[in-house]
Image (tube, rainbow, N blue to C red):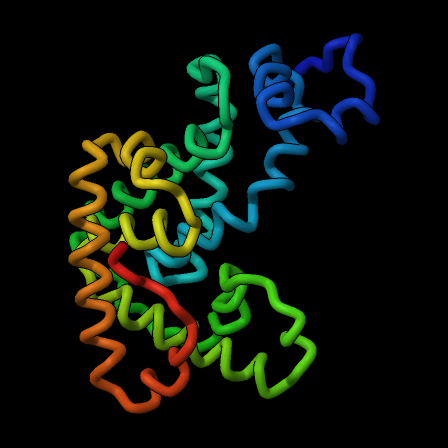
Length: 216
């Protein structure tokens, strides 16, 4: 059983307010409290990416849990800098493994999963409007169904660049392919999403004005 030590120099208040890089460097020394703060900060985004890629709440929960375990085990490989891209490389690798092992695109039923679907949409004061909440959830369901039709490479590029708002260069580092390849995958994925969502009148109405997936 693994046992983690807490460095005597790290105070709880310092841990809570430290930046991600400081926390990760502390985690390299076995500081589990520092790592737990990182988990809390990033768990929602990690789950959302896993869910968007895999299309299943159960699989996403397993993948997110595995991601944080692998990140803890791989803490020594962190060389400093921004933690988020480093962690998301572990996320995408874990999801790629899941897709390869199942040898299919995620097509699980969305029934029962809708509570998670609107978590990665931009925050808005309009969420206090119940009708807006319904519309956002319906939009998210339609988006997930369209994402499920993309190839894994296109889906991950779109999720990283358009949902998580990573730059092409950051996504390149996460996926481990040239930035031009990421841009090409994202472009093709956006085109397929537009075709898929645009073919349905309900999708066109719900997505009108969203401004998502523009090929800039």
